[in-house]
Length: 386
Image (cartoon, rainbow, N blue to C red):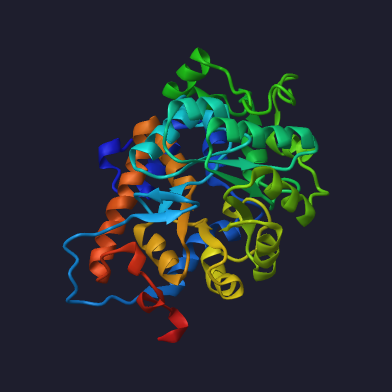
């Protein structure tokens, strides 16, 4: 197994994560829906954009800072909301939140986290966003908003692309359940993950900490994640509900999961301040556009009235650079930091952030652009424009 110090890129962290995790946990991070075309395309789509460097510029100092969601950040990318981090390492969401604070960027907590939003707030003073669903229990959604206000969260993020769970076949193949369940079919995989198994025995608490007091779905024993999602999420949610949520929150509101200009316009009309261009990491509807391909048409549709955050497929600093040059205000990362978390807990998340920060700073210098604020469409072109 490669050591953390010898992890020189996100792919190295992925390999280390695979070696340390039982198969159900690794494939839950790594997998997508159906044929996983969107999962692969999210990253490969960046190859269609070429960077256009300019030379003989003063790049002795590189400024990666930016402002998004009302927050001044040291980096133009942040940690996306991801569910159930305890599955991957006993440092769970707390380790990821501490890492984000150290690097001066936002940590996003999922509704389906294994740490409560209050515990995250007590652990880190860094900028925080809470990812919310409008559940069947609307009072629970209202409760989330009030708890976020009391706990000092700076932004709210509504995920809209999950009326029901996508067809994540790897979860079926590898027996992914919540909480984890060891069976004859996966025994060897669990037994060979000594470090992970030790901490499972030491601390077997996998409760969904933000909803357990109202929805004790896991109290009856292990169940499929798809079964849980399909039982709790509300398929009647519409744009009127977004307007209601915006009024309840009255702060930076991100709509996560859109890929069309029409939906971006509706989000703006409903009171959103930002759109997270995302297809849920290729885990919902397969065959939808890559987020990077959605930047230009959505920017054309909404102008500067909506902040755009690219979420999905980012594995390199050049990917972040291309997204920002195309018109995004920031990017968010999910799998890259989860690979780091699985690889080495908080230190692994910090390594993932460090890798991308170093790549981005170096790439900025090579591009001939000293500041994130100076990035524009002149630095990037589509392959078809050659």
